[in-house]
Amino acid sequence: MTAFIRARYGLISAGAFPPHVTLAGSLPITNEERLHEVIEQVLPTQVAFPVHNRGVQILGDIVIYDVDSIDGQQNQRLRALAISINDAVRPLLHATSGLPADTHDGSRFHAHLSLASHELYERTDLRQEIAAFAAALPVAVPKTFTADTITLYRFEHPTWEGPWWTTMTWSHRRTWHLRQRS
Image (cartoon, rainbow, N blue to C red):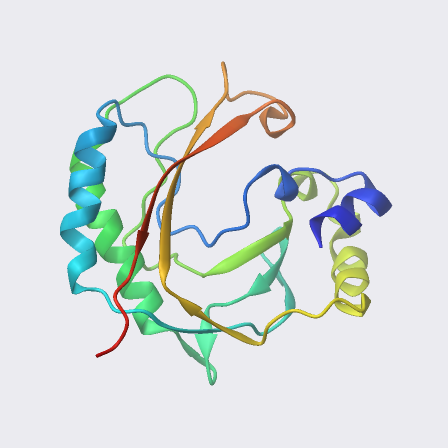
């Protein structure tokens, strides 16, 4: 979807990231090994669970696939996982220059897959048009899927200023799999 949006509108920010639902945002952490350990302490209590895709929506300033709810209620298992991870990693954060830490207590959590994001802070005139364009594309997307994988990525940029998503780099660091129901 982000490739279609880029081809039509020239927006690249959502496609600059690997497809993901953010559980914990930017985390200025220097000890990646300790981060792995902390995440591994959270995951044994987690079991794979269903996620439902409500389709293309506008969330604040961005266009998304909305995967936050099941039958009109917030997906509490997804929210609980995000809260657990945020609570676990918060003590590892340290102050840096650049992008500030982005953790939350769950009150702001809204699970989504971004389709068009950062550029829409400036191009507010395109939000509705892009949402309608994305919703009308004949692209088969799953209505439901299983949340069973947690992936840690490292994002890097020298300054995190200006349109940093145009030159940001990222690398896959680690994958964990949630246990299946027994």
